[in-house]
Image 1: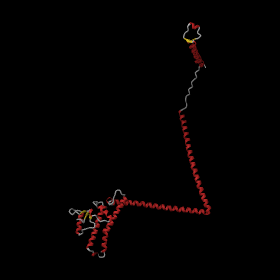
Image 2 (image 1 turned 135 degrees about the horizontal axis):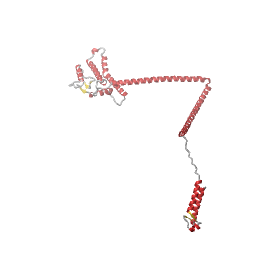
Image 3 (image 1 turned 30 degrees about the vertical axis):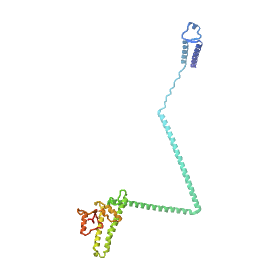
Length: 337
């Protein structure tokens, strides 16, 4: 209240000062003798300052200072952490309860669906049973027994079929293992890479098949061209062998020697110690078509230098055997000398 009064006095004096200046009233530091007599409109500045100081001092004495109350935070830090942990646990617990409630609701929903389906199935079965009972009466039990017996028979049949399939599967597995073993042995016995028709692009099975085709073609060629004529001559003279004429005797000997020469060359495809060379593979491959030996693929016998073919040729000359049906020995034409 006193502050308001001081402000009001200050404002009044200021207004009075302004008003006095307008009408000739002023505030001065000193007064003349005349102004002291008549100074209605003049106020000393010292007087104004003394009045202000007087009211200020009285105001400061009367105004009581309000005490400042300082509050200190005496709450322990661990208590705050405990409260924070408790709140976190409560939030996690609420979340888990919410998840469990959702799972429980889903489980209840699925169970209700299953119960409904079971009720529908039971209802349909009961309807069928009731219709069966109504239609056949006391014969429903025998019918059920027949159905059970039929199912048992089917089950027994299925078990037997399963055993049969297992047996066939076991036989197939054993056969496959045996075939792989035989194929491996054939790959070791025969010089597969030297056989007619060999190709790296073929599978092992195709290579083995091609090998067997070559075996069969050589056997058929040897039988048709050499062994069959020998058997024919022998059958014709078996009642009187001593009367066989020289021509047929020479022919039989020629056929036997030619057959031995054919298989001698064929052994080059089997025995490791014998090296395959020249046109031997092409000649043996041409036997599949039943053709005769192409003499253009053979070398002429060299009688000036020693060779195996020359030794054989000289032995044949001693026996007066000239032209052979299979004139090949070691890539040489024994008929050309």
